[in-house]
Amino acid sequence: MRPGVSADVPQPAASPPRDAGNASALPLLILLTLAAAWLRLSHLGSKSLWLDEGATFALARASWRHFWWVWWYGEANLQTVYFLLMRGWVQGGQSEAWLRLPSALFGIASVPMLYVLARRLVPASAALASAALLAFSPSHVYYSQEARSYTLTLFLVLLSSLFFVRAVEEGRRKDWVLWTLFSFLAFYSHDFAALVLVAQVCSLLFRKTSPQAWKRALFGGLLIFLVALPGLTYLFRASPENLHFIWMPRATPREIWRLAGFFSGEGVKAFLALVLWATGLIAILQTRRQCREGSWPGMLILTWAFLPAAITAVVSLRHPIFMQRYLIFSLPAIIMLAAIGMTALRWMHLGTVLVVALCVMSIPSVVKSYGKPREDWCSASNAILASAEPGDAVVFFPFYTRVMLDYYRDRSPRIPPAMHVFAPQYYGGGEDDRDLLRALDSNSQQFKHVWVVLYGTGPQAKQLEQRNPALAAKLAKLFGQPRIRKFSDIDVLQFGD
Image (cartoon, rainbow, N blue to C red; front, side, top):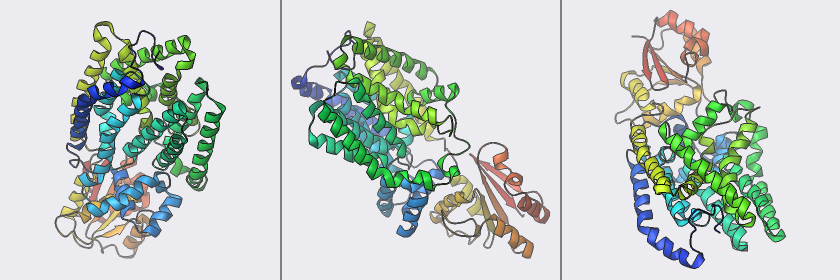
């Protein structure tokens, strides 16, 4: 009986015929990879960068001294691998498409990589279905078009999982070494990858594992922990507001349902996926009852799919961090669970119909996301640059959003006006909104216009009176009511005619 599926699920061939199965699936896998490439490369640079992508660019261009300061005190600490990659990458270009291209490439490469991993855990048809579901996943496509570390980390998690499975099943020292290496790289690409590593080791509790394998697993885990220790110390150095934010949610039933939609797609797609997940879960548990020794691959998939979310939910009872994108590293396991459900639903090929329906129904969601910027910093910045005059003042709330104006100012096709920016450089020094207030107090006529950029969601987040009441009163007294221009998640206030 093949591990991870129930007795009534079609079984893959043993090891010798496996190569033949791969060969027969190769043309379809190539087509799926090409489809994944088309979805991830299409309109790659059509949307504005959003704030986190602007931070990526700022860190990529920062001096090494400044970069290592941010590494010690800020976000670069737990995404080191990605930011180091981007420091070299920006030497070749700075457009939105170029900055996002590494994420797209890692997203594309993850499709065949998931197939290779799945062939060791599930039947051949389920492995191919897994590749298809990842290729058309709206969430995976979305983060493949974002200049952040998510798809790189997911790719490294797949490599870590592949060598973990090989190490456990074949016991070779080389595989344990490679598991340790890729696990360490995955952790330093995004800290939440550590939850997948915990799930991997916990899955051994569902397998009759030799003392030698346990020793190597624990030794590798200890080595990963020691190498990760410099990054983990960030948890003690950082201020509480840098570890979690007030907008981070708790694991409420609503957020859990939203997570299901994140993994599957919204609306009807979520219900179709639930059918596949439930069927896959039943198939794995049936295998566990009927063949306890052969059920480990299925239990690995279950621990990988659910344990990271469970740990995050528990932590969120005290510190809300139940962010959907932080749990994207469980997406491969969730997909393989659905693929197992497909092989179990054999009546009139119902499982295959559901998988094909999910893939087809995901295409409109992907296409719709192409034209909807998360935050329209491009339009907001260009609106300021087109109307501002030399000597104007500009202030940002919060201050670090100035990186977005810096990015689009540097890429402006014409020479931008020289403006007095009252916002510190990214994690650096400089004047702020208090300096602007003092400047207005000392000489109220020195600025013809004052531009105020307000970023955030909710009515209070965009009210200047809530951010700096004294500055709001001063500007109103000097210039009267501002002209307000609204963009996605951004308000631009122009004081002065």
